[in-house]
Length: 334
Image (tube, rainbow, N blue to C red; front, side):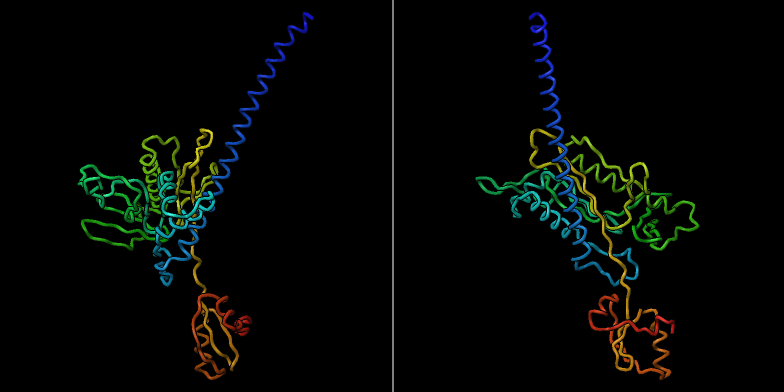
């Protein structure tokens, strides 16, 4: 009996330790599940926003020969992001829910080719009055709202001049004493190099993300962004080289006092059209790549074939959908 009385407290102590460990394990498991769920929700939303940004925009200007000059519409990306995120959360997509969710998104950045747009908390100069019971009243202190910035270039000040870069170009621009030159070549330059361009773009976006997060979280940001200028094997992160979306969100539920947040980054690009010519060869509907245009014209002028040109389409798929077949004459190199 003496040993049994000694064993009771030991068994009780072991039970207490097991229960405490189980509670901690359960808490960690809940955190992992909720964190994983939020990561998936944000990633799906940013992917959808990136696709709509370049797929549905009406000002994308895809006829440009230089693919680094495309325009993007940040409002379109943000609207898609919010719509997908609200549905993932099980919320209705209305103005009230969007306003409530916006409080948990410190910033939303759309990195275009020649600069970036950022939606964040900042002074709203358009709001100069507030409504009171006695009517509108002028205010002196600025009202902070989630609003868009104008496009901010990827630029730096070097050797008494401003240098600005573009994600998709092999050249850089300069502003010297009010004179703008946009076609400077990287090659042969001892001051501005491609590596310096990548570093400037990465630093610009990194500073924008961290500053906006600090502002959006009222100076209580415990995490920060680190955007590499080149691929890093240590972190397996790629640099920003195409149109991208960067954002950060806090868990709007804050369940069980667990601090859950998610970084979101997604990119998309438009494939360069592979233009084709559609025509009739002796009455047969044919198409070939646009680089064969000169051969077709020479063949037509020589009279060896009856060729009637119809139109130019953006891809072989478009030509096939219109009932044209690839001209086998160019398969044999004829």
